[in-house]
Image 1: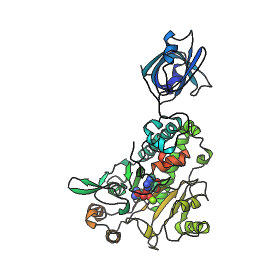
Image 2: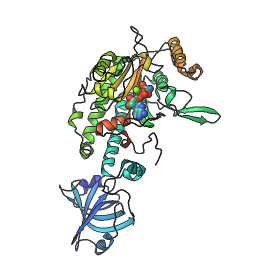
Image 3: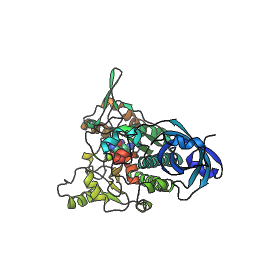
Image 4: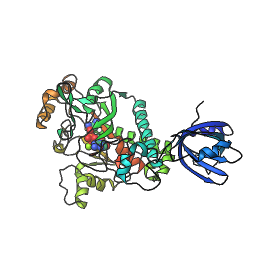
Length: 429
Ligand code: 4AD
Ligand code: MG
């Protein structure tokens, strides 16, 4: 039978065998302490001379940080211990040594840690962040699965651009050119006509030649799309969704957020309704604090921080100028200068979490937009079919998983929010 540290509460008073890695260890005379890490938790194992196996003290001498070991002993309740339980250890066996483990309790530079990312993920803080990420992903799936959405994943190899041609990764698809997907949206528009409410969830790629705290080259995005939803229905969905993900995560990952010293009170208030402001109003706010901002432009990171700092909940900014948005955005019928687009900006300066809007459903307008954006109509033949056969108003959005993880964890940089980040200038390990 396998035993895991996270389950120790079930085995108080019983003899168990744990397998894992040495997280920490120390000796003081007749007693030796070993903090065992098995990925599900950390358990203090206490070896008392006279009470444990005779060999254990000898074997203990060969232990180093991250040696893999097997320990047997009896589970005891111990409130002062990391997980609330400890092991009155009996036997110790080394499974494999760990010589000169490169990550020690001393401070290491970020570049060094990023080069050792495959080992860095074993440390407490990184472990906590990735546990939060796993919960967020699970909450995302539960929300859509539980609300009648059908998962219809989009391809990674694509023949055309969704979010502009400047950040496309080009690759070879046998004899043809292909691109890595920037977004699954266009495919979700087609699946929405088949299933009504759909979503895709997977990695997306942007060849962004910039190093910022908020950009990855490869990031995960969840993209719901709903037939017959307008811009306002779309905001309502996004609001319910983000509330659900935040509230579930702070409940289920309270321990990890404590490890990260997250001020959870800032997340407890993330409940709908979220404020909604028109682009013009947001632009005026920005202009007051950043006189260089040109009204009509898209917001940069610092501009988003100016806007979001006015609210203690995420804020929707809607009706961005048509000129700064993608070809598929529907124009505001009463004023085509603006589009039926919406971004959700996170609190505490974390910037854009969500981008989306209502899509153009008129085939003639869409053809015109494709041409204006310098795209090739031939590549979008299938996409235009969605308008050719029973066109319908529809809306959707994309939420970036890593931005959400950074925000909920309260960490300054996106590079720690994914197990193996792809950044501009980094494709290793
Ligand atoms: O605003 P974006 O570019 O929107 C789309 O791709 C739409 N097609 C989505 C849709 O409507 N189905 O990206 C959506 C979100 C952003 O708000 C941000 O959270 C995240 O994806 N994102 C990134 N995250 C990390 N690194 C990057 N380089 C990102 N680019 C976008
Ligand atoms: Mg965007």
